[in-house]
Amino acid sequence: MLLKWGTDLADETKVLPCYLEASEISRPLYRSMNFKDVETLDIDLGKWGGEGTHHHYVMYREPQDVGQVE
Image (cartoon, rainbow, N blue to C red):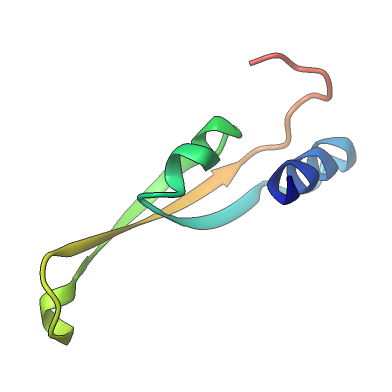
């Protein structure tokens, strides 16, 4: 609900694009709200005693026309 409130406000005011960083788990939610991938940051967890790679996504969303249907 908070994400929808923020994106609706951005659409109504035509502010600059929205920017966020997402995990793999949250990425589908943001994509459903018209956020697009800009870059993927792959973090090698082995450098800090962990295992595997963490994928971190940089995303943005341009203001949408109010009433626009995707």
